[in-house]
Length: 335
Image (cartoon, rainbow, N blue to C red; front, side, top):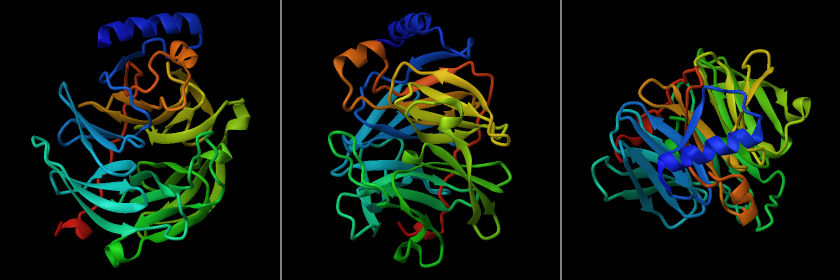
């Protein structure tokens, strides 16, 4: 289906839903591929490239200019984040292995190097969401095995941090006993860290110390029950006004929440029920990229939500994002 025809479909869907809060926004497909579990969008501002993954199809994608390309890996791949100062070098989550990926922009060949393994005693676990903090440290979390019915055991995941001490010898387990470690975001001055463990249906807030890259004073920031939001929170990003944009899995929307007052500012309706993650991108950082999921979606739901499984570009929101941060270079110089 072409971008033009999908745009017409979206307009029809909007007219039927009568629930759009962003009247000047337009949504189009980034490309025609239908992803099973689209996740982890990352906008590379240095090269104007959008990266994302399809977890269950074991693929890392890049969208550059008008080209969509992907590489095929052998395990579930949950995130892809570039390394600072290293063109074509990325950190990826591969099963429960932290690995590097060498994939230069104008080449089709690639190389994967395994760096560290976590959750040795938790069979079926895998990496899930990850981000670099204001210092460039990698924060990455795991989750338990998800069965065909979507059930995930509670408390089997951990949020880890990769620091420069010992590099891959020891990933620090910062938050144990989480269920589905998910969205992460930091405010502009690096004093706040927002975090999602999806089954809690909450966004948590920590004080973040930029000098030590540590967190403290954990508390609930926003609860889905407050505004009767369906589904659960998934991936998350933050805009230049320090407000949060939260993918609403099984809610067919992206939530716009004040990063200071926790007030719900709006609901951006998405023509896909299983919205998985979001990031700002484009040369001006004024486009919102949204990943979605098609796995387990019935034909009836595909008809109801015609952009299911697509990566979407939302324009006209009237806000700009903050640049996605790269992983600091120290541990990766010899790779």
